[in-house]
Length: 186
Image 1 (cartoon, rainbow, N blue to C red):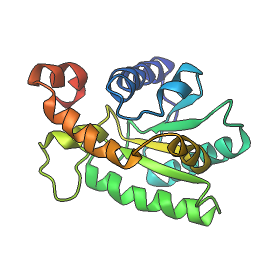
Image 2: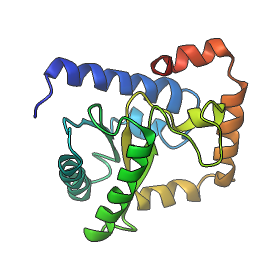
Image 3: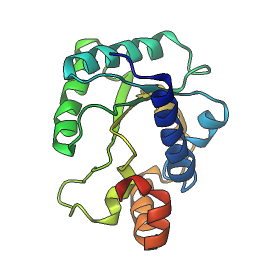
Image 4: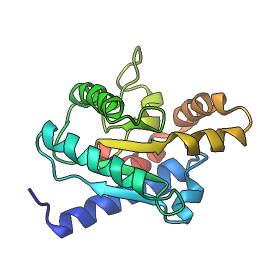
């Protein structure tokens, strides 16, 4: 199935806005600004409506990353607008994505970070502001290069404090700021 170009463009724009205003704008990921500035973040909008198709696309995107130098494409966001609508479905699919990494021999080379409009950390209430750190406009599988992560962490003091700092920042947002930054959650 193909998505209309206008739909792909709109979704890409919405994800780009989230990336710029939330992920980079709030400095949730202190390592995202540089690849964004260098245009090394690939956004792929998946037309998949079945998990089998999404696994095939995920494999193709991992292969693309493996064959492309980090200086050209540092990381890929696989955006899934037509599938995995509930967080439970998404979370179940993450296990398949991790298994795919193992089956393809890319465990330790790549990893998958997760974002979803209904993201909810284990043991946390659904409306807890901490969940905002991983709530995106669409389900997203973020494909990361392990070597790049290790390199970035080597030059960052106290990286283990990033999640704590992010949660605190989300809790300090006013209702107005939340509405502005996360309009897709309303």
